[in-house]
Length: 212
Length: 212
Image 1: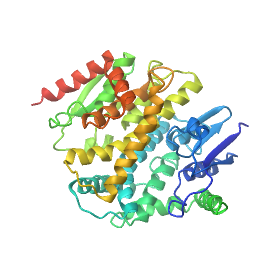
Image 2: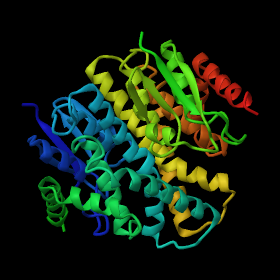
Image 3: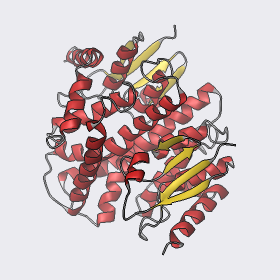
């Protein structure tokens, strides 16, 4: 069995706890029942060793034997190749999962992340660009709402695409951005009720609390 | 030989011409020498058929035989599986390409796209959130500058990761966002000097001009 090591920060402030992206990886590892260890790097003083694994100084990264992978999307795709629980082997279903994995990151999070930066900043100025950003997110959520109204998961079975999409929507919901999107809210509730999410979330909270 | 069909809009306004994302796919197809046809859908009146292939009403999407793929990242990864010119078959090099493909989309474009929305809007208000967004992009470009200062391409050979990264940086450069990042600018110049880029760009411009 290859040795999987997930690296995250040793500590983060209160606000991002429960939302640091190692959560997506813990969640996938638990869904697939893959054993792993967790390693920590300093949040305050980012070392050259850290940048050699993650050139943007972020977390997480995963090592699988002598292979080092950063970007939660790339890590999830790697793990999905190791477990059919995360992505079916059938070519067409595999294509659906990969397409929706990119869509969660690039069509939905691309719109929700800048929106959440303004929310985190407590910035409520309604400038021209800000209005465009709000419209960008609203249009993506409206379209996603139609998709999710008709299905349980994004593809035929629960997959890594749902891990990312549910985690992305969860942050929108935290800032009350899903009030008009009932199917999206139900989807988040379905996904976060899964034992693997509950356990991954508790594990991240305990990890950061241990460093306080 | 499977029949590859790339679908894009029939027409777009002047401003996005040369930057519509079918460019990334045309570029990859030309690098790999894969034959393809181009199909158009209305920009103004998006049909139910359009949404059935691309649930966000965007372009491009690609059909490969009876498989339909949306999201430029997913399409490029699919094509990369068909040509070693776009991604080497070696497992470690493949991992590097996939990691950087996600990084181009999720670490760099995630920061540059909202920034460019403000630029497109002509919005120069320096609000709290906007300052955060500017810092977000600046930190990513600073880190990328160190990476690109030491190498020709993101991984050992030119790949789909460079197609996305160069296209992302090209749009930042359009709004003079690369003035302080010489290695990033040289990288964009290297990438866009490739015959496959030049030809893909000319093809997109001609496609939209034909509809005027």
